Image (tube, rainbow, N blue to C red):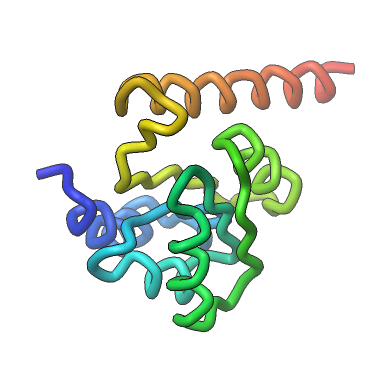
Length: 130
């Protein structure tokens, strides 16, 4: 079942199964263990959208090990993460709120994230080819 709790619970399993390096970006639920997971597992967190300020307060109360920033949009959050990520780090989009302030639905949000990744990959490929 794809719920905020299942997303948070799936992170340690994914980390073990796929041998991922620590995460740069995690946007999680204000409920369950979301803020604590961000604080203890992420090297940094870019929080975006209408709940960013409230989530920021919860994450900071959990004493994050990495930098936390509030961004207006997903594109700004992604750019912040890319600029700070080291080779091998995963940039993870793990939304648990609807994001209706920016997207029609979850599919629209997913397409935006996929587009940002494709555009970044194309830029990196172009630079590497020259």
